[in-house]
Length: 284
Image 1 (tube, one colour):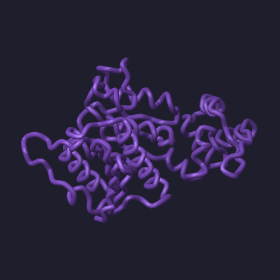
Image 2: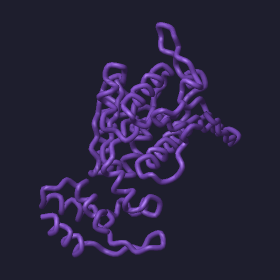
Image 3: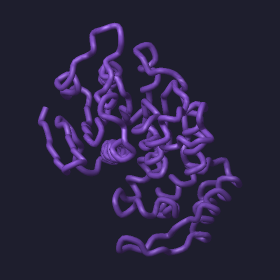
Image 4: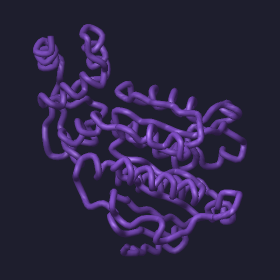
């Protein structure tokens, strides 16, 4: 069966020049047709194509950066996004467009009017609707290769181990210092990389924490009171630009972790001030 599909790819693919090379590409229409007449999912068709030298056209612009092997690795991977707000929603969309095969999203909230200024998928029509359900439907509409696991619940000690299981990386899109530290512990216990990102107005920080590496405990302390210690963004505001950039940095780090390409923010924190374009790295 698969050999027949590969032959069909050869017959139905077409040459496209990109990034100094010529690639045999498959259209979305052909990909779905091949999936419908076989026992394969669209994602499995994409992986089979990449493994045999064919490029799904929707990933052509990725290949010059991550290669066919890197694209196949993304499709075979799972990333957990904890929080579906300004950072998390943007991160989820970028992961889907890059072709991460399974995206799990955790958030207990519904969209509110105050989310409209910055949160991807927040629209006037989605107010009052579950964030994870809206994001899930949107991601599946963006890329049929993506499987979305939507969890409308709060990530906490009792469920974190189960949520993290099977993930190649975890995107920290939380807004509580205490919750971030709990997530970091769960990632360490589960031997999973946690990619931290946070904003405070026009200020961004990001780091990639591998199991066994120093992490957030060297930079911040838990609240210690009855109420969770909130992030400084509750005082400095949440504009549209800084969450989007923080998400882009985190997704780029996830791609590095999955594909093994590039140098991750390992054992160092990136600080970025968008007001004066100050960059600083803090070694941990």
